[in-house]
Structures are given as C-alpha cells and as structure tokens.
Length: 132
Image 1: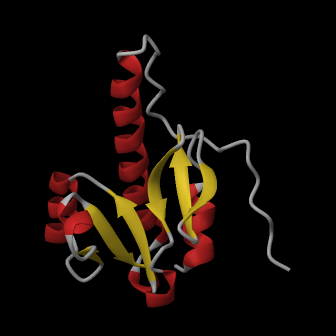
Image 2: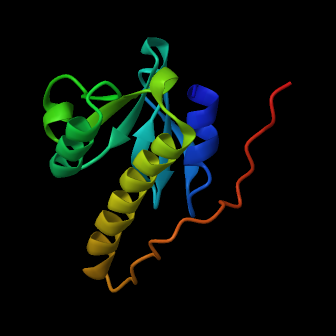
C-alpha cells in the first residue's frame, strides 16, 4: 500500500472528505480528523484511534503499527507502515478510526439534539481523481 491507496480507502467511508491541516493531507468526517498523511514522507499513514484501540493494534501487529511520538501517540494517534500493510488491514484500521470519530461526533451532537450518524461505511459522494 502507499499514500494513494490510503487516500482512496479513506475516502470510501460515508461522509469522508479530504482536507489539509498545517500543510498535511487529512481525512475528516463531520469536520473532524480521523486520519492523516502527515508522515507520508516516512512511509506512514496516521490513524486517530483511542489508546485502547492503539494497544490492540500494536499487540496484534507490532511490525505494522507504532504510536506517533509524544502526547499525540499517548492519546491514540498511530502510524501504520503503508509498505507492509495489506488492503484489508489498512481498510480495517481506517474503518476503526472513522467509526471512532463518528461515535465522538455523535456524542457531541447528542448534546445539541442531533442524531448519531450511521456506523456503516459506504462510498462517499466525493470522487478521487484518477492518476495520470
């Protein structure tokens, strides 16, 4: 897998949009980031997981996942080594990050009377440009 695969898969989730934060490509749902390509130059994609999810991914596949350095990593931000990832594993990891963000967005929305978004992933209406 590579950055283009990460982008393609991230945009398959319902409501997913590509954006940018501090010059790095990010992927958002409900306006909030669930994944980034901030470490693309090092061969990583980044997933915004919970600390518990991160621990489970690290335990299952320590060669594939590693915490982002510092405080972000302690809060669950996790690198995935793209060159070592299969499409199924990358899609599953992105789904976990997307679903967590949907749940957090729903919790915030409940206090404003909004309904929680569905947890099922379907293709986004946004199309990814095809290379060359």
